[in-house]
Image 1 (cartoon, rainbow, N blue to C red):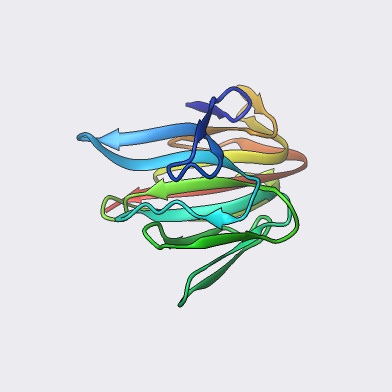
Image 2: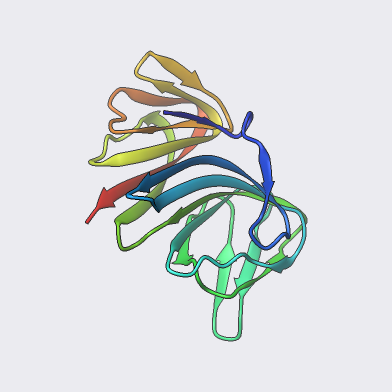
Length: 177
């Protein structure tokens, strides 16, 4: 399945503090298993909480931000996937202006999610369903599709996929329990 932030409609965040582009949602038996989105973070403020879910948050544009509360401090930096409890009550403070983040929200009772940052060369094929999201350069999917920045795919196999053009791709593997 192909995903694209270039054509996805912007929707208001759960807490109303910004917008995100929902890229894909996978449900099973009426329950969300995972959701992919690209969020524009234009101002500091409260971060949306998703109780019972886990998050992967990866800055793809801008300098990033700090997420914190009385007992937690998480640094969101460019191309460093940050994994944390989606139910945490956190405040976001921008580091140096607006940023954009690729987000995965998932149910840790149904799947595990493992993020990696990949650069030029063959994409390692991995067991289970995986997401590939192009941050820069190109991703050639086994000669069938060429994806650019803001595009990606959800696939059962990345065999033959190659990152070119000085590219960077976020790979997230989902494994069911």
